[in-house]
Length: 212
Image 1 (cartoon, rainbow, N blue to C red):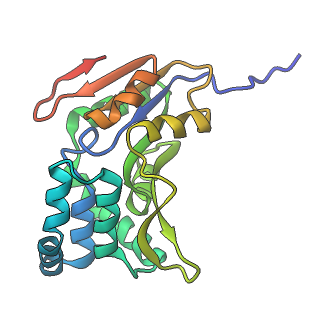
Image 2 (tube, rainbow, N blue to C red; image 1 turned 60 degrees about the horizontal axis):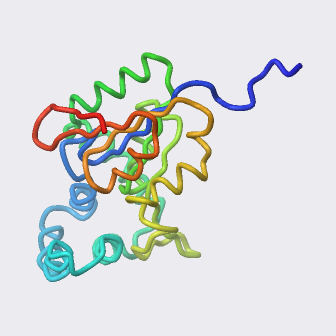
């Protein structure tokens, strides 16, 4: 008889990042950190038609995001971005954390549950932060890397948002044969929250969390 289980019997908790573990968006602060304040706002002005079309729902999230990434990060070497991402995760992210979200993370960790970060945010800064915060896995959006190691702003694969979160969780089999939890704060998290046994939504602007 095999004494070792064929799957991890521990409960697993899936956490969104922006707005769930932080008080807001992390991508734009990261881009500002990379290029500096003057260049950040100069490029933001150039991108105003794109952002306007996105907020007016005339441009898909993934398309708008790649245009923004190309404007700010196109031409950077991936190693430089990971180095800057590690600094960003150490210097900036701690100032952005949402207390009630981090409290739920710590509770699951204290119970011995596996914790997985599932986010549309970028791998170049999430990986190092997640490692320090003791996440076992990171499922997120990654930058496509060219032959010489430079990025264009395009994604490697799809933007990890909405149904894509569910697809990647299922492929990973991290939700297989175990009790599952998930936390999010937006419509883009609902597919993930509906996938699990216990899904929770953090309300924007307050400390309330609701079960769905």
